[in-house]
Length: 423
Image (tube, rainbow, N blue to C red; front, side):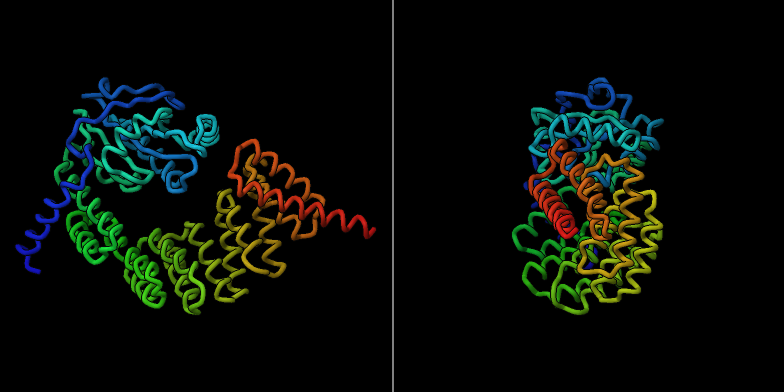
C-alpha cells in the first residue's frame, strides 16, 4: 500500500472509530474521585492537585492476577516519578470476592511492595465515571490526569512507563494517544464481531502509530486465538511456531507456551511450548515463571531427566519467591504421576515457601500438606491440611477451592485411619 493510500485508510478508521469511543476520552476534564474509604495514604482531591500533580488512577481487584502482577511496577513508577509530582492511586470497588475487609487485609500484607495510595470505591461511582464512561472493559486499566486536570492517557499499567515519562517532561502527544485509544477500541470490537482480518489491519495501523506498543505481539496472539476458536489446531500451532520465531518479548512467548500447553493431541505441541518457554528464559534468565513453564513443557514431552534438571534450576532461582515456589511444588505434585525425585524436590520447594510466608497463606499450606502426604508424612499432612482449611475459611476463599481442600483433608484422614487399623 502506498503511503498516501495508507494514510487515507487510517484516517477513515479514525473517523469510524470516533463513534465507538465512550463518553470519556483523552482531552476531557478528569472526573472527580468519589471514594468511600482511603485504605492506604491520605485522601486526594483532584481539584487541589491541579497545577501540582500528575495523577495515575488505576483500577484493580484483589482476585485479578494481572492486577497483582502490576503492583510492583506501579510501586516502582511511584518511587521513580515522585519528585516530578506523580501520585499513583489504586482504586478498587466491592464485589463478592473483593470486600473492604479483604482489600484492607490484602494491602496490609503487601506492605511496602504496594507503595502508593489505595482507595475503596464503595458505591462504584468512580468506576462508573472512569471505566464505564470511557468504554474500558477490563482491569487493570490506568488513567493519567495531567497537571491541568485533563485526562491524557488510558491503558494497561504495564505500558505506562513511556507515556508517563513524556507527560512529566511536557512532551506527550495527547492527540496521538487519543487516536491510538480509538483504534485499540475498534480492534477489540472488530474481534468480538468475528471480523478478525479487519481487526488485524487496525493493529497494523497501531503498530505504525505506536511502535513501542504491543501490537506486533498481539497480532500473533490473536491469530493463534482465532484458529483455536475455529478448532483449527494445526493452523493454530503453525501460527504459534511463526510467533515463537519472530517474537522476543518474554511475556508474549510465555503466553504462547501456556496456550500451546493447553492443547491436547498434537505431539509437536509440547515441543513448541518448550521452545517458547526456553526462548523466554534465554531472554530473561531471572524469570522463574518462564522456568516453571519450561518444566511443564518438558514434562509433557516425556523427557523426565531433562525436566528434573530444569525443575532443580527453577527451585533454586525462585528460592526467595514464595508464589513461584508454591506454583513449582504444586506442578510437580499434580502434573501426572511423577517419580520420587520430583516429589522430594516439590517438598523442598513447599518447605522453603512455608519458611518465607510463616504459614499464613492457606493455599501454600495446602501445597505443603500434599507434599508431606506424598512423601509419607501422613499425620503431619493431616495437621497442615486442617490448618489450611481453617485459614481458607477465615479468608473467605472461593467455595470450589475450599471444597477441594476439604476433600484432600478427608483423603488424608482416611489414609491415616487405615494405617492405624493395620497396626
